[in-house]
Image 1 (tube, helix red, strand yellow):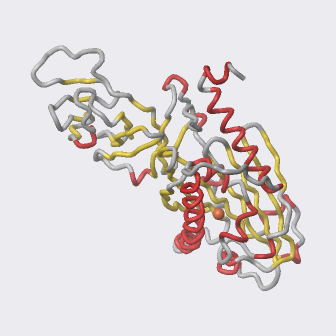
Image 2 (cartoon, rainbow, N blue to C red):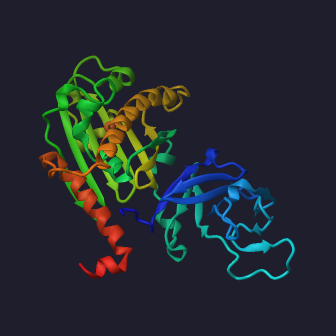
Image 3 (cartoon, helix red, strand yellow):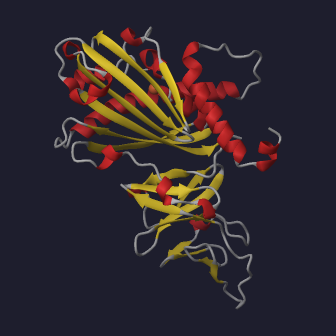
Length: 346
Ligand SMILES: [Fe+2]
């Protein structure tokens, strides 16, 4: 079990959380999402404590949810406010209420101890609301794989030459070493590919005439957020590490939401420093990202299917695994800390 509960997760983009009862699943828990009349997002356990009917099959009445079986009704805080046919409301007549927070077009949910939910810990990237940058939402990509496999993929620049040959990678990057740093709960995996032809993405959006210097900085903030700073500059500029603003630069942001041990949703978006007023550019970039992330999905789902079978030998360890291995260690430590029985034995 690698779920880290005490953390904020994306429940959905704001536009995907309507004022109707919407069932979702996170960490194998069924949750019903809706909005109050004032528009605030609400997340409740999606199960009536009476006969276990999903509350999402009931009715939204004002800010309350009425079970579709016998009309037991729950407020937005999860407490029962009405039981047809009786006046006393037993203390046990509640459903779990998950703290939520909405900011920047994203609805966040806290899966852990509600007393520890602190909105100052909700992820933010300054470029998402900075005038020199244009943010653009992507999709919520459903992948039949444990979210740690996605996390592994998102601190691994070494795969792009092989998995994304037409969009995000090209053969020139195949032999370039990867630098890895651990900084608290963040793993930074990076590399520069100097003086090489642009990848498909920057051919389409960079208007480069010759070779480019291309960088990748994968920041993975455990347990579930990846920010990939990538871009290209004209190779003639010989740009330094801190001159990335001179080029075409993007941050691809991935928020991983574990659905079950074998499923996850990758909510991805990007923010870019070019075409800020070009309304079509975000969509055109997303077309390329969709091709690339579907390629990751195929690989990760195939690996997950193999994981269901017993392993007959230990995996071969490679130098490029350093970043993903750091990350898996951090996620395991975070998950273990939430289970005192486990932490006490270490
Ligand atoms: Fe990938």
